[in-house]
Each structure stands twice: as C-alpha cells, then as structure tokens.
Length: 261
Image (tube, rainbow, N blue to C red; front, top):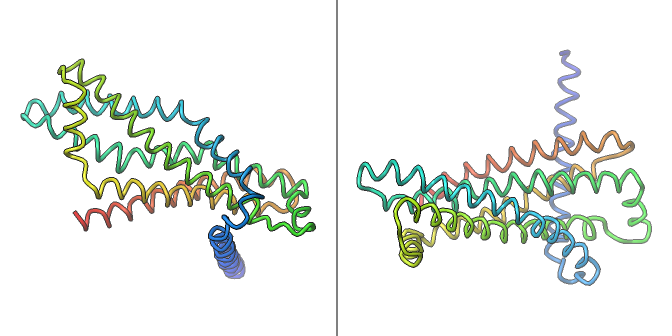
C-alpha cells in the first residue's frame, strides 16, 4: 500500500472517530432531556421495549434454564469428589449473574435488536424519512435514536433479571434430580453466596452493554448515505463493533471488579 493511501486511510479513521464523538455528544445531550419530550417519543420507546424485551423472553428463558442446568450437573459431579458442593452456588452466581449472563444477553440483543435498529434506520435514510424529519424541525437523534437506546437499556436490564431467575430455576430442577433438596434451602444457599458487589456489577453491565449495543447500530444506521446496498454493510459493521466493544468492556469491568474483591 502506498504512503498516500495509508495517510488517506488514517485521515478517514480520524474523521470517522470525530464524527462518532459528535454523534455521542448529541445523543447524550438528548438522552438527558428525553423526559421533557417523552410525549413525542414514548410510543417509539414502548415499541422498542416490546421488540427487544418481550419478544426475546422465550430464547432468554431457554438459555437461562440450560446454563443453570449445565452448571449444576457438572458442578455437583466434579465438586462432590472434593466435598465442596457448596461452591456450586458461587459458580452459579459468577457465571449466570456476573459474567456469562450479561454476555449472552448482549449477544442475543446484538443479533436481534442491533441488526434491526441499524437496518431500520439505514432504510429510513435511503427513503429520505430522516431528511423529512429534519425538514419539519424534528431532531432525528431525539426522535429515532434516544428512544431506541432507552428501550434497549430497559429491556437488557429486565432480560438479565429474567435470565438469572431462569438460571436459578434450571439449576434447582436438575439439583433435585441429582441430590433432592428443598427449594427454600436451595434459594437460601444461593443468596448466602450472593454479594452486593455481584448485584452492582450485573446492573452496571446491563446499563453499559445496553447503551453500547444500541448506540453503535444507531450510529451505523444513520451513516447510510445513498443506496440500499449500504444497509447490510453498515449492519455488519455495527454487529462487529458492538461485539468487540462488549467483550472489551466486559474484560475491563472484570479487572476493575477483581481489584475490589
């Protein structure tokens, strides 16, 4: 690659980064003033919650039950050899509540809602709907982006709670098959191992991941310029970027959490 092409690519990346920073700044500004305009965008918010949250309950339930069951099956079979079956509850908390639960929820929402948001906004740009909103004085960030971000964050939080409940139930169902245990004792043992920090980390991840996996698809969706052929290209970029940032942030939060333990 020639020197001029390298310089050109660097300039494009810098311009793209600056554009994203400007988009982030405008989004945060409109996000904090959302409740002043909620009568206009509340319908969009409710639709996003229904699509992102309600319609994903089935797959979240199935995955939660499966994770809980797998942890209990392998945990009891391995730890019983060392007389450390109580550690199963700690493993259940670490995997379902703190780590695997938020990651899997993020991946599901990226695949469902992230792609849908990017595609929808991209098609709106191509069909000049975003231009029409600007022409009548409606801010596209306020009307299109902010409700989707809030909808995904709220849905992420709700789905993560639901996945935790499904994981606990899945664990209990298979625990009773291996070693019969009263439900009250199982729940009591679980909450004895659950720390306040675990809850805080779970809530923090739901907010951060929800924000990231909705902001990036909105950004790439609105970056579509001319043709419908750009829409799938931007959607793929949105998915890859969302997955990358979720993994990076998860590692960062894990390191920070470990330092407080």
